[in-house]
Amino acid sequence: METPCRQVLVIDSDPQVRRKLADRLSAAGHIVYTAADRADALTYLMESELDLIVTEYSMGRTTGREWLRFLQTHFAATQVVIVTALPLRATSARWTVFRKPLDLDALERHLGQAAA
Image (cartoon, rainbow, N blue to C red; front, side, top):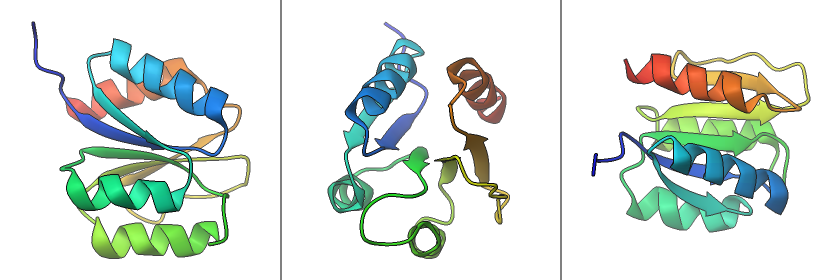
């Protein structure tokens, strides 16, 4: 069996979205961890060597801006995909913004290009 190419953390408050993303990324050969919120995500962020974080922008008590600042400060080398309905632009070369509703095919193509 081929080794999965990336370790991915999916953070989304919607269990159906989280499950769809995890299933799709797992089927593409990635090792996928999931978290319902940022507090849950911290466990994986601190204990795992992640290659990619796919995160919902707006959720929980912290603002999306605070969350992205945290990720940029502590995980600057990790690729981040931000999922949002807001007109947001990436402020880091390691970040990509996908608008809701999320196009899973486009996300998979992006990950394939980024890994190449």
